[in-house]
Amino acid sequence: MDTIQQLLDAFFSFKAYVMLPAIIFIIALAVRLPFKKSLLSTVELAVGFAGVFIAFDFFVANIKPAVEQLMVIRGLEYNVLDVGWPPLAAITWSSPLAALSIPLILFLNVFMLAVGWTRTVYIDLWNYWHFALLGALVMATSGSMVLGLSATLLLAVYCFKLTEWTAPDVERELGLKGVSASPVSVNGIVPYTACINWVFDRIPGFNRLSYNPEKAAIRHDVPAAEEDGQDSAEKDHSMSWLAFFSEPMVIGVLIGLVLAFAAGYDTKQTLELAVHIAAVMFLLPKSAGLIGEAMMPITHALRAQVERRFPSRKNLVVALDTGFLMSHKSVIVTGLILMVVAVLIALVLPGNRVLPLGDLPNLISVMSISVLMFRGNVIRAVLAGIPVIITFLLISTHLAPLYTELANQTSGFDAEGLGLITAFTDGGHQVRYLLFQLYQGNLWAVGGVAVLLLMMVATWRRCRDLQRR
Image 1 (cartoon, rainbow, N blue to C red):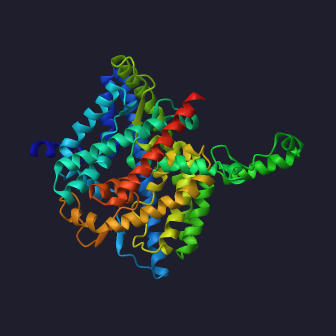
Image 2: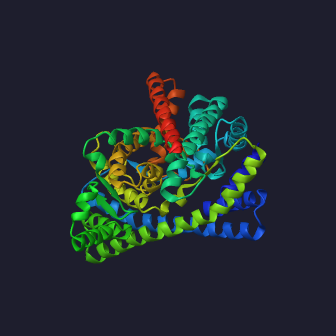
Image 3: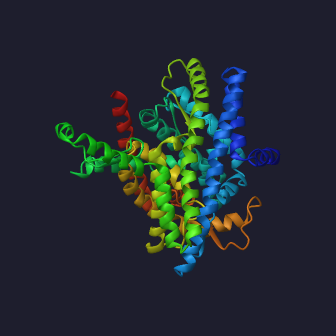
């Protein structure tokens, strides 16, 4: 067991943009993609992922001082530090159940494919830690590895199904067939998104309001007859300004200016922050597009081989990390707006003791699939994101003592001198928290799981209806 744990530690010590392409290269060769094509796709994938990570690191390096300065000049103090996902990953991979989780999840995925219980091919090994984190928390509090592993596999099944049910949205919005997002942090809120979108559809007036930067338009669904009667020059002028303010770069500049003003920056710092955020908003979609392009031949070959092995299994869905979704303008714009909203909510939310910082940029990824489910409508996505942010803040605050205790026992993360730590999004994940409370024996969690199951049924029906169209 120690040898396996050492191999796992060595393997996961690599950066994700090195480790994931290496896994994909092996898979590409295994599914008989030509060597040159496998190598080229792997290099493109590595460059795309590296670009996403570099852009995010650059973003954090610029926004962190602004948020810290905002706290200073406003006289704010929060005793829980949002350090992002690294301590959670360290807690997971140092747990004794980590070594067993990977083969068990792989076996579970293959078994469910074989018997027809899922169409998802979950090859994103790195994001297995999202499943295993729940198991590590359950094991740490109950002392039972069996319970921990059962919790890990339960969350994996949940994610397999939600990945499968969101594939039609990815195909409709991005034109990518047979792929969807893999992380639990993204799929966890999908049932909520499906239900809140159903509610939005039934609000008179609001159900016609749409702002989609991907289409560079904001409108109230003006009837065709009225559109035909509009002055052509006026319409073109209006749309040109709408297209201008729909560009993520422009929105990045505006939000950079607002954040810099709130932080009390001088003119030089303000303009630099605005340009830096605009640059990130430009670079992210470019890098994400490269990821999607690189994965297409591999996913087609993988799907063909699995379907050949299981002839009765058609329309398989390959689960990938969310990098390829960053090419959609609405995803970037929604995430950027919600980052500012998250900071504002954190300042006034009763019971909250954490200011989003290390995990703040992860909102782009968390909301990505939801944005596609809303058909790129940023208005709906931002409004739906507010309850998500509120629950992130409250849950991550509540679990901070447990995360801190486990991190202090972990050699892979140095938590000394940090005080209470948490992770705003990954540490406040709603479904993981619900299942954790269920394993703690809290009766309210039973009712919560029942509601979640009903929401999952609604999500499945929605997927079925989309596939019939």
